[in-house]
Length: 198
Image 1 (spheres, helix red, strand yellow):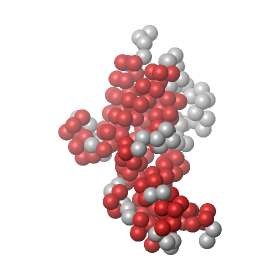
Image 2 (cartoon, rainbow, N blue to C red):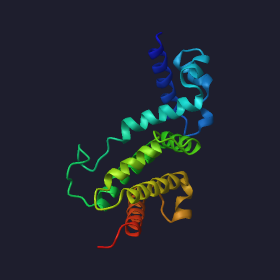
Image 3 (tube, rainbow, N blue to C red):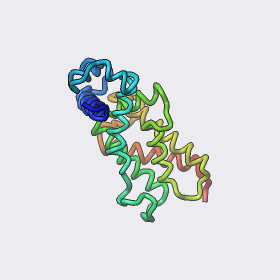
Image 4 (cartoon, rainbow, N blue to C red):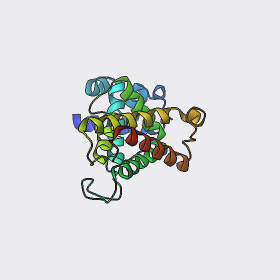
C-alpha cells in the first residue's frame, strides 16, 4: 500500500472504532486500530505521531464533514436570512447541539481532546468561529469572540454534565425541547449582557 492509502485505511478504521467507543477513549487502542486497518502497529505512530493525535484528527474530520455545513436555512451563511443575531445564533446553536446529542461518542472525544490540547484548528475553536459568523450586527469583534467563546464553552460543559444536567442546571438536555429552551435562555442571557441596549 502507498502512504496515502495506509493513512486513509488507518483513519477509516479509527473513525469506525470511535463511533463504537461510547465516547471512552480508553476503548480505542492502537492495537485495535492496527488490526482493523490491517497495518503494522508502528505505522500509526509513524504517520500520526501518537494514537491521541490520530483520534483528534479523526474526530475533527468527522465533525467538520457533518457539522460545519450547518446554517439556518441558507446555503450561503453570509446571505441575508432575515434573522436577528439572536435568532441566528440560536438557530446555529440548536443545530450544533442536535448534532452533538445524536453523535455523543464523537462529540465527547472531540471535546475532551480539545480540552487537553486547545488548538486554533480544533473543533472547539471552529465551533466558536461558526458562532461568531452568526453575529453580524453592530457588535465589536472582541465582543463577538467573547460571546462565541462563552457560548461554546457553556454548551460543551453542559453536554459533558450528561445525566446530571437537570440537577446541575435545571434542564434535562437529553430532551430536544429542554435543549432548545436551554439554548434560547443562554443565548438571550449572553446577548443581553454583552450587547449595548438600543
